[in-house]
Length: 91
Image (cartoon, rainbow, N blue to C red; front, side, top):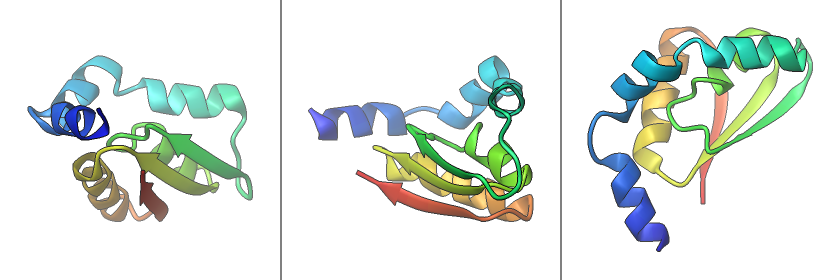
C-alpha cells in the first residue's frame, strides 16, 4: 500500500497543483500557529514544503517528512533557492 501511495503522489505535477490550489495556505498556517524563530517544527506529509518552507522562513528549525521522496526533493530545492534549510526525511 505504501508503494502504491508513493507512486500516486509522485505521478503528475503535484507542485503545480499545490501552487495553484493551496499556495498561500502555508504562510497562513505558520502565522496562525504562531511559529517563530527558535521553534522546532515537524511537518508530516510535507509534500513540496508549502508549510515547511514558510516555517523555516519564520526562523523555525523544521523537519519535513513525507512518504514520497520525489516531493521532498522538490521542497528541498525550493527551500535552498529561498535560502532556508529543512531537515528532510521520508518514511
